Amino acid sequence: MELSYKELGDITVVQVSGRITLGEGDVKLRDAIYNLLKENKGKIVLNLGDVSYIDSAGIGELISAYTAAKRNGAELKLLNLTKKIQDILQITQLLTIFEVFNNENEALNSFNK
Image: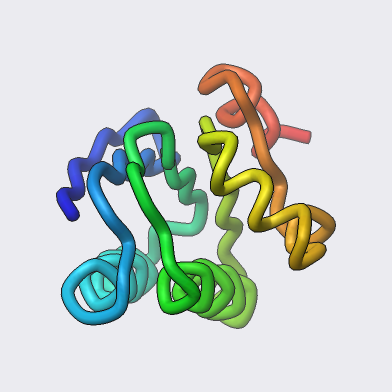
């Protein structure tokens, strides 16, 4: 799994690509989110459009990231879910928890509401 970051004002967009799986992928994602929270980044968008696969550990890490963000007074939103990820979040009813966007501008503008 690879991560890249884009700062747009006070919003951090994290581009995630590859596989979010038990072992390396979930640990990288966890470290990335916790580091952003330590830097007081309060508005985070995870762009998952280039994620080829996510397992239960990866889903668990998304939940953990969301919980950590809320606990720290931050917001975490999801962008560009693949059909497979959207289906998993639908089945597990996690779509009711996450704010999900298909368009980066909509995700960015949602922080101003």
